Image (tube, rainbow, N blue to C red):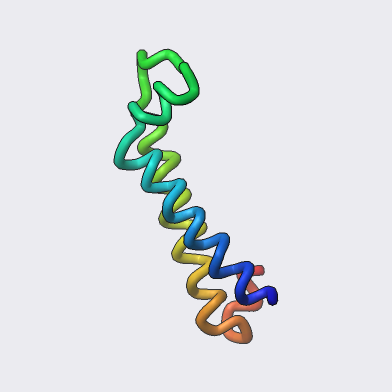
Length: 70
């Protein structure tokens, strides 16, 4: 059950991070935010994709090795 949760959360974070990273204008329009400087959304998207997705996939593949990450 916990491994399945890691897989689901990692896939969700990949999709969420890619929305921020690839289409920050879409997110700004959807939330009706000002579009003066949305470059920070790309940084957040890259961080979400890199840290959450990669980290959770590593834990999903071999949880005993990566127990220190938790």
